[in-house]
Image (cartoon, rainbow, N blue to C red; front, side, top):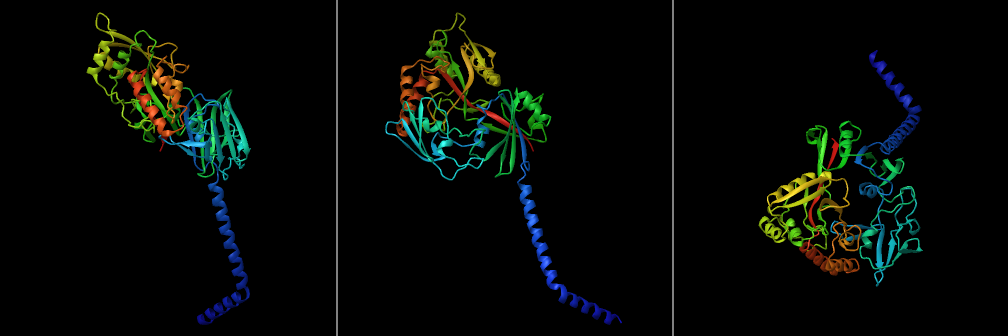
Length: 452
């Protein structure tokens, strides 16, 4: 009886398959295909969601749309050129360029495969740098010509500045999704990358480093950057279990001890030289760089700086200045930015051993009048420092007036040949260190703190 039932069951299955098997196979295949299509579509949709990976980054402000941090600008767009760490210039949006024999004309030939983040093609018509004293020609959609009034060899570095269409539409990996303004100031800016499927929101309204650190501790932001230190309310972010701390070097700024060369005391070349020889060989707040040029610069050929700490030689120079009082002491006042107060105190301790009394004053900006100012300046990839040290320039806060240096700075920005520029800036470095308007100290450390 059991055998008959098994045979009947098998016969029924065979009959069913014979009659409906083709339909079953077709619908099964269709169902399988639909399943895979839905699976792929959902996966693609999910991975394209703008907040699949989100990071909120806090910075100390304020910033306007005209002076956003380079960290943000470089994510949104690119320039006609790009600069290397040593100051060399490479093609970027422009695939090549040609310089007129007189050094005043620059023709850039654009890449033909680039698009703005809104999908429009990059053409000469879209590129507006707004230079003064420069005429612009656009003979075709892939060529742009700049005609300068005077020869200016750092121009190739100047056009590394990121290019934007109206509304912060750039050529970089990230596009601007939203900008929140408070009057003229940017409170936040949200970026999104289709390529990495990442959203970055920069909060730029924190007035101080302490308020920024507090925001991180409260979870308002997942990352804070450009911090001079990681101390927080009697402890350190290094002790936070959920915090990751990264120490980095800012090679775009050079911390410097500026001397007011028109001051009755600091006008002494011997004193300025002596003070330069007192500078420590290492600083806790940064990476030593005792030259006005970065040691990475192609123009800094030997990479060696003449000033190493030498207290005996420093004392001889200071004594020869004849500026000591009857008690054998010299009194100096040093203004310093708050973030470099630690370095100011270290320098004052060294000077105390040489009978120099130092009064330290905290300032948030370059003082109108000072003897010595501990601050910083932006160091360009190009070795040109005309604006800082030429006697005609308003940014020459030391009031430095050295005709030899003036001539070298004038020649350096007019010379197009790299090898000749190396010679010019080797002389510039040599002579400015022999008659120092400042002591060049270090590239500052900065810290990034993020949640793990």
